[in-house]
Image (cartoon, rainbow, N blue to C red; front, side, top):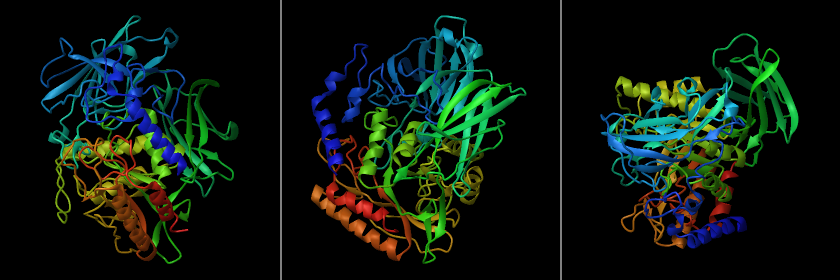
Length: 607
């Protein structure tokens, strides 16, 4: 525990030594006034806004980051292209956030406009130029040099436009973007975003909230990798999709390695399965998150024309019966109790966007240090680098689909009926979610619905997920309205804990419990009227209550067949103070010398 205490002491020291006034930059940018900030806010500047390559599983050496200061204006939705700009906004932080430098809201009757210029490197001449967006919420229209490039709908998925034909031969290139986001006035997937935050509903994110970047590629290039590990047969199935008008003579060479030494290689065709045979594979798990390196080369008539670097993990996830005949969650064919916190993925200074890559990594490190082996990513999708750190550090992930459409319906009301466009948008974004996160070994469970929020066509949706990704498990609905399909029966009990009845095929899991609240002065979103499922006034009483919950949880694992549990929650979030950490990430509320050994004993309960 010494490492954990040292890490937190450092964060607290940083927070004391760096007052908000020191954030002013020579450019004139500075964070907007905010109730609280994280320690990493000091590292944010117009020249250092998420500088890392944003796509760790398909990396190229040549690229150009477009994060930084852009022009912006908020104007009526039906108004045409802006004639003036209101000021500067720091991309990729949402306009509602302090780190954007704006901290203003955008209603459903308005649009947010962005503008900047960029130049193309001479060395990129003759290449196709791709404009990538990590995520923009929600409907995005893009112009380059006054020419419309395209439109994208979806707040959580990356998208790309080939802008080669819109570029001029030299000089600065103009980039303009408009974004419309109806927030909770629309039917689109949005998670916990609302126009008027209260209780468990939080501030909206509008516009660009992940990295924007340029990339030069050849006429035909690697577009997507799809990887499926098979530990039983010691193979990795790889499919390489390409972009561009393909001619004959294209092949793919894939080389897997570990510690710089080649493990295996295979050659095959684009858009077709390529099998890499891996002798005695090292398996990925939370206790040993081993990753193989992968180099993928696109070859045309014997010459390499494109290359991307990636990685993969060899692991399996399944529901199998233990020695007592109880269905349990198995990782690599061994029973493993999955235990971790509900992770909202909100930040006081960046809202949907973590202040830095190190901040994202820190959250995962804290979960590991506290003894957890899993996190449930709650009705939000993160940037690819968050999943990279889960892959790298060894944290299992249950991935929620962001909810949308109608507000939650009461227990027992079963499902809502969506209009055709709403159903289409849900299916479209769900498909993109699975497609884009397919290769991360950390993800072991898809969760399409939470507590009936926008829940519809449950059986059909579960079948859709299983068709899109037969390699992972599906939780048909976390809490409330279960339809008897998928791989687990998931209940919510506050403060709990509790367990569903043992079934013959599906594993029983506790998708949410706990919610023990403790507001700490100086670290809350508002000074008074903060909220928790149960309120405590001291660290000691909170720790004792948590200990009592976990001792009861142990009994459910042993005697009631419980296979996983999710504690609410990792951090406070706006006025909700149920976090293991404060919203600013500066304090862990409980006595970790007591709780961390308990957490570890929980995940080892089935050994």
